[in-house]
Image 1 (cartoon, rainbow, N blue to C red):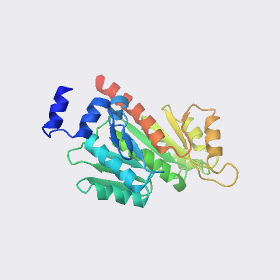
Image 2 (image 1 turned 135 degrees about the vertical axis):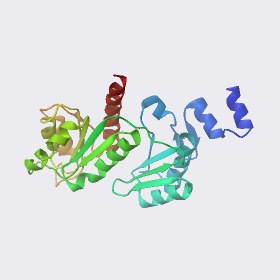
Image 3 (image 1 turned 180 degrees about the vertical axis):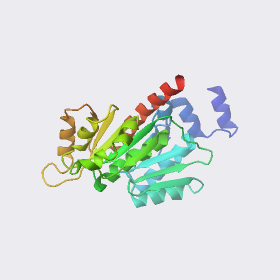
Image 4 (image 1 turned 90 degrees about the vertical axis):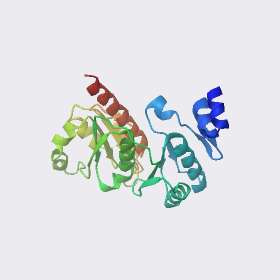
Length: 252
């Protein structure tokens, strides 16, 4: 502790960085940033912009970059994205408007690299937002990501055309709205873990993702299921599997 205090006193360590070393998180006017999550859990901490003002989101992003070298923002509106970019003018900014994500990198930051691949599959173009959020998380965790788009069960030939790629992946994230059948079908064709990502697309009763999640939960083929539109969770879970696969390969 004395070394930390001396580093703060001589200016080589900021109070925020010192707090992270002592408590594991940084306190800001907009809330606490869990800077130790990646070390503790193997997942990058994300800043959920939904429900936060642009200024609050930017404040947390600054704390994230200062303490971990990177800020990952999800569910970001254009105003959130602009505020983060303005607050971090020296950072490289990667924005995916469709996935509603913003990632800011300090110049020395390097993403990890995993020796594992994840295929992200969508039933239709409307599933791209949640699937894109999962893809960004996986990229930040270091996995190799393959996107397979618009292969819904209305024409099974579209899925079968990609069967070799599906079977080569170490883990699959399969996003679908409507009745949510695609993950069940895919899980019956592969011997790799499948994570079902229900999406809130559809018509009328159950069209808000309820039918999709219930269909996946009742799957007669084995798969895991996350909550509706929970791209971050699906990507994180797939990333943990990918990391385990990578660790096993590199320990041989």
